[in-house]
Image (cartoon, rainbow, N blue to C red; front, side):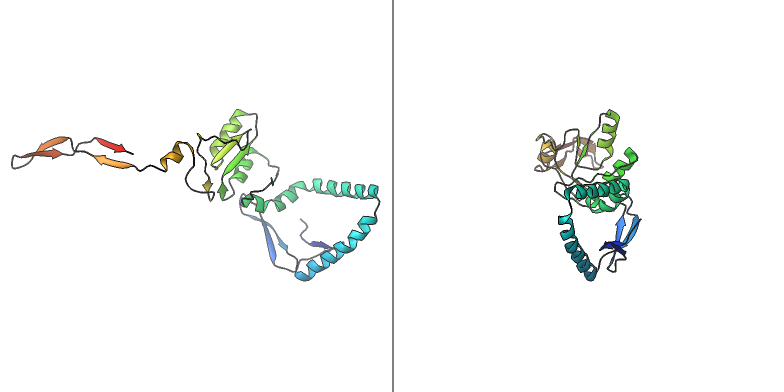
Length: 211
């Protein structure tokens, strides 16, 4: 895997602090990349500014051919790019119009990736296979799992997250229970003989609770 910076058409080693790219499922470090120093950032900006003038004067047909070539090279390394670019998206709640798309080898790997984040508010699954749907809704650690119908709410169903996405539930029976207090009541219902002949009540096995 190429880890050097590309500045002005040349590959150079980053002289800034090292940046670890991790596997979001196992937290294993895939590669350590040297980040750019301030001097290297300035050099990259200067090279980009100089290239912008040449790009503007390049005929549209030639620019189109170059972009197609770049796209082809990116597709050829799509797995590598996906692993390098989605670490933060898998480990944080972005709350934005962002959807990391990463090819996986199996359903096991897909579920493992989905559960690798410290958050778990909602998950969407698209499938035509009932067994796949049932397995996902059972194994994905998320407060809501939508199957083929994302972001549909129902006031009769509880809403809330797993892990760092919150505690407790709103709506549904679970949400109402949060406003109730449970009381344990113990009543003596049987009597027993004391040594002096006096009868007294003894604890019975019955219990009642009220809210």
